[in-house]
Every structure is written in C-alpha cells, then in structure tokens.
Image (cartoon, rainbow, N blue to C red; front, top):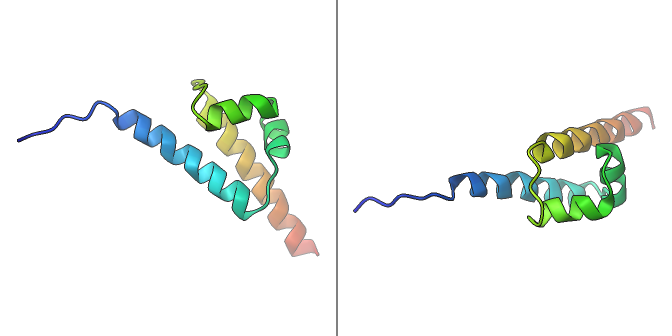
Length: 80
C-alpha cells in the first residue's frame, strides 16, 4: 500500500526552524539579537519560529542573520 504525504514541505520548514532554535540555545543567542540582525522585530521572529507566520523569505533571512552572528562570535573567540 502506497502512502502519499502532502506535508513534505512543512516538515522541511519545521527542520530549519528547529535548527535555528537549537543554535540560538547552544550559542546563547537572544531572540532580540537575531531579530535585529534579520531586520525584523523579536515578536515577528517568534511568530515565524512558532509557525504563526511563514514569509517566503523567512528561512533565508533568518538563517543568514544567524550565520552572521555565529561568524562574529567565532571572530571574538579567536581574537580573545
């Protein structure tokens, strides 16, 4: 019996969001800091991460901002 799953895209959406939250926790990144780097409000970031909002550019915007914050953190560690 073959099963068709129509939610495949939703699973991928959830995966990137879970990874963002994991890295925020792991590297002690505050919601306000990530939101500022992504040029959105902290409230809107929370809505995106909790699936209340799903903007088309959300994944790219937030993961890019997170990567910039992580790079800066690495540079501080190296220079310290």
